[in-house]
Figure 1 (cartoon, helix red, strand yellow):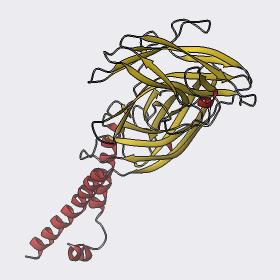
Figure 2 (cartoon, rainbow, N blue to C red):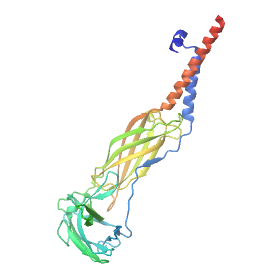
Figure 3 (tube, one colour):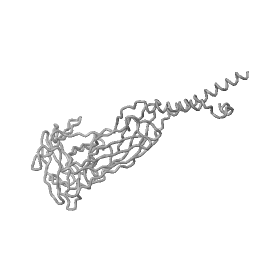
Figure 4 (cartoon, rainbow, N blue to C red):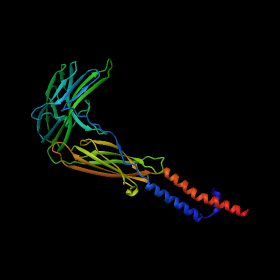
Length: 362
């Protein structure tokens, strides 16, 4: 084929015209093809809440207990503990623990710090991790500061008083932790131990100016391919979202993917949005958002905007952050289709012309 093209010389006008027409037709089809409705799939986030403020646990071996905030001057029917405090304040409260199993229980009761996991769940430090925040503000009347022991007969309930002492130098803003009840058991004759924990949240907002803040980092976008030359694809947007402020935040994210320079296709840029679970101050979550209905136009530009609503005692406003990144979104199937069409539009007339010259010579 290369020798044939070399002898043919400059591209004939008709062939050139057919090639241009083929490219124009394919471009028109690309832009006119209906786009799939944008959808989103994000990493799933689940939050479980107890009924009427009660949390309970049960195991296959029949061991079960529940915890609930006590009804007192701090409130009735509470789901957890939330306080508005000043530096140096002292708050007296209690929890009620009930043994719902048929065997006696020896539980440890202690306070610790809370954090938001990278997957977006609220969690507490394990028993072997010493607290440095709100967990150090909690003391219990039963037992020593670190671990108070609570013995309960089958069906027995007990009220466990505790005190939250706010340091004189406590920083303004939200501080989070939990009151934990735990049962540690040895598995058979082995040295393996199992630690079952059941806890209730404790939130304290220290008076002073709130400074809510969010930060987006490590933002990337990658785009899948498709065998359909005129089809849409899915872009995956990844980023890390950090609560850099002093307030608890419930974020709402909006992720949009467009073409180079913000180029949009019929129906606009593909996008996805949704509300995330609460992020505690200082915590970072890792987000993976899949946006479908994207047209592969060589480069895909992703923009992320997150609005954080301040939650907790008294609320406190909103804060916002946005960032953008780009990545390759090459329509390989379409390019191959275009090249084949152009090659056909160029080569076929040349072959016909060569055959015509051969016939004339004969």
